[in-house]
Image (cartoon, rainbow, N blue to C red; front, side, top):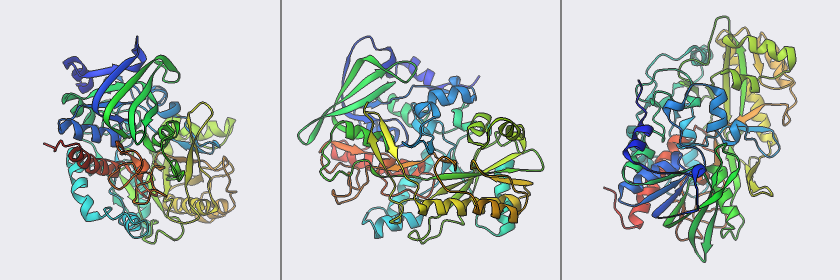
Length: 531
């Protein structure tokens, strides 16, 4: 039987409050309140707890663990993802996959771990003036996290879904590489997106959160932070509502957390939304602006032999050939494979009725590529904006500009070439008006004729960044390079919302590294040196 470290910790007496089971209002006091338990929040909580500080972690999602992960999409999306896996931009045109559970997206992501691209950091330093965003300065923090979370290039042979990407790149002479993954003793099941049932994925759920709890931290889960109470230039309290077991409606009881310092790590939609609901000081109205995705488009191939793209490590090969060092030119994109699980495929494949049923019947032979478009480096890619609906919930307005659409078309063309070079019988751009093509000439004609408009083209993203940008100038930035608020003395932000552009690579490793560095500085500022 596989051990469940969360259940074992609860049996040992971890301090855990379930907001869905409150029978009264609760008041908590601590040194640092960390809002969010994903990549930024959990690393911060572990670091500060190791420094001897009393930490309270407040998480909107549930505390679910390996014994509850059954490799079933129908269970996982509704329980572990934002909006039950249906989160979209305000116009409904871009699907956004984000975790909403203890461990955040690290609990349900596909484990791909990349350091920030050199050209991204160079832009942040040279154009945006971020003096500390230097490869050499960040290297020790990356190394610390890579050791902590067993991050290393995937050593096993790729599954057929990823090997097709390798074969196509080699046939065309394109640059490719092996993806590093944060796993230990991986069973190579392929269901990472539903929560790891073997605890091989070194997510925050099984690493940093338990480490913080072992050092006396308090975890409050199924508790939605509504606002920060602000008095003058300081946050005086964090107010949350317990959430009903369904995860949708707030319950009748509230939790108030008072702390010396507050760290927002609720993600690049959640953190700006909390500041907006709190009416935090924002004289230049920058909170929530320049929020970035990696707008992602997909190409599906039908291969001559079974692929079974739901099985094996979801991502182990990548192609950076189309990410030029000149970030100011046409938008570059990173190509990766994507697993093809039945529910995810059903909501992604174009077509209706018999056409869609025919497409689903071919699932075992389907191979999938995705292209992550690098956004935020060009005047025509200003990103989106987090806003509040009338009920106070967050929405992301995100226009796909002509600059991004042009990159999407190039990405479809590139992916089709790779798939055909790998032996595909047919390729299909994931677009409602696309038709399959059995040759490069046919694919090129088909893709070049596709109308580029919202909802017709299927666009998605699992990476949300920006909205609380870091930098020295409070006229355009919310926090400084240490993550400290420009306007509130006891508030920091430690998540991807501090990125001033998109990253151009899967962001979890960079969030970990920056959170480790910033929390070490915060511990020193709070007069508690790390042990």
